[in-house]
Image (cartoon, rainbow, N blue to C red):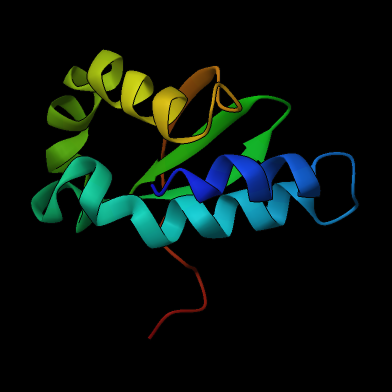
Length: 99
């Protein structure tokens, strides 16, 4: 992410929209952070405290996604100025209302 992100992040910190704003920024940079192939099978779902929850949408990729956790966490920490301190993976359950 651009260095300006750090400035904007500090302006958002403490506001009611801070987590939503930070998550949107991460979502926008996701393919660049982890690569297009992994971005196609997982996505940033939410921020809980200082951790990012990543949903894995294809269980066949679960092991591959989890294997890059240390590298991905370092990239996220660098990109967010330390805002993201932990990374958790969860398998996305199929939508019961999907056709």
